[in-house]
Length: 436
Ligand SMILES: Cc1cc2nc3c(=O)[nH]c(=O)nc-3n(C[C@H](O)[C@H](O)[C@H](O)COP(=O)(O)O)c2cc1C
Image (cartoon, rainbow, N blue to C red; front, side, top):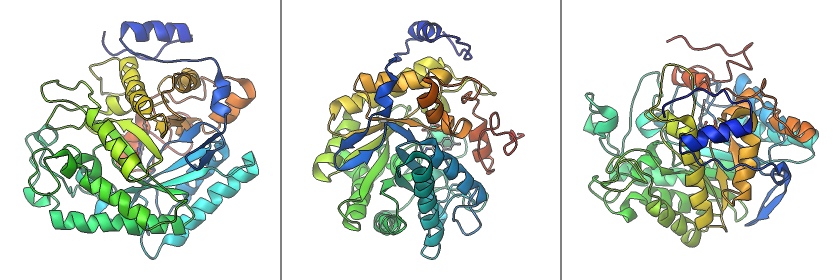
C-alpha cells in the first residue's frame, strides 16, 4: 500500500487505513489527560502540551530574535502549552544552518533575554501561568550554511548522503576541535540560564553534528568506533552544561533514537537489518544519560529532514512521494517514542510528530499518554498553522479541521530556501509558497 493523501472524515476511517498500512496509531477520547498538570523529577508542567522547536530563519542581522521571530513566540506563548521548546540557536558562527538562524553570542544576550521574558509575560497574562521554556543549543554540522552556501562540518564521510559529490575530508571535524566544542556547551548553557530559559537542549537529532556522531562507526580516534566513543561528545557536552549551571536548571537533549538509514550510516538500525528500528543502543545511551549524568527529561525524535523527511514528519503533498504510507510512518514515530518511555517510565519523555493526523491529533496525543507512550505531546507544524489549537480544544473538545496543519511540507521548503518559515496555508498573509 503506497502513499495516500489524507482524506479521512472520521477517526474510524483513519484507523482502518492505518491498519491496512501497518501503522500502529494509539488513540483515546479521554482528552482530559492532556490538560493534567505534571510534577515529576523536579519539573512542573501546567499541562501535557509542548510546542516543538521549529526554526524560523528570521533572526535579526545580529542573530537575535527578529520581528517575525517575536511574533511566532508571541503566538506560541498565547497557545497555553505548558512547554515551549524554542528552536535551534546556533552556538558558533560556523555552525549556523542559515545566515538568519538565531545565533547566540557574548554581545547579544539581551535579545534572547527579552524573548524569554515576553513568552513568560504573555502566557502569564493569557493563561495564568508561565510555561517551561527550553533553548535548543545547536551546531548544524553537515547542514551548516552560515553565509548562504553550504560549508559542512562533518563527523565522517557518508556516501549515502554525499552520493557522487563526496565532501572534502578536510571538513571532518578533528578530535581537538571537538574538545573545544564540548566546552562551548558550557558557555551556551550558562548563557541560556542567564537569559532566563528554564533549560538547555544539547541538540542531538536529525543528523546535525552531535546526532551524526552517534553513527560514526568507522571514524578513527577518540570519537568514533565504539559505543563509548560515538556517544562521548554528547555525554561531555551534557556534563559540561550541567557543571556550568544551577541545580534547578534543566539540561536535556532532543535525541534521535533512530535515523532511518542502514548500518553503518545510521543510528538505531542493526547491521544486516536494513532500516528496521533497533533501539538497543538508544536505550543504553539514555540509561547512561539518566543514571550517570542525571538527565530528567528528553525530547525523542527520529529521521532526517533532508534525506528521509517522511520518517521525521509524515506529510503528503508536494513533489516528494515517500515509498511508505504516512500512517505507517506516523506509527513508527509513536512506536519509537513509546519504546523509550516504557523503558524509562521515570523519565519525562516529550513525544514528537503529532501534527500529521490534523483534527485527530489530540486523540493521538491522548492515546499516547494513555498507553504510557510519552509524558508530554510535542506539536511542531500544528503550532505554525493553528497556534490556538489548545485553546479551541479546551473550549470545544475538538480541533477545527479548517485551521489544522495540512502537512503540506511548505514550511520546511521555505526554511530550506533560507526564507522566513511559517504556514503558507493558514498564515498566508505573511508566508507564500517558495518557488523552486
Ligand atoms: C519548518 C520546520 C522547522 C523545524 N526546525 C526544527 C528545529 O529547529 N529543531 C528541531 O529539533 N526540530 C525542528 N523541526 C522538526 C519539528 O520540531 C518536528 O519534530 C517535526 O515537524 C515533526 O513534528 P510535527 O508532525 O508535529 O510537525 C522543524 C520542522 C519544521 C517543519
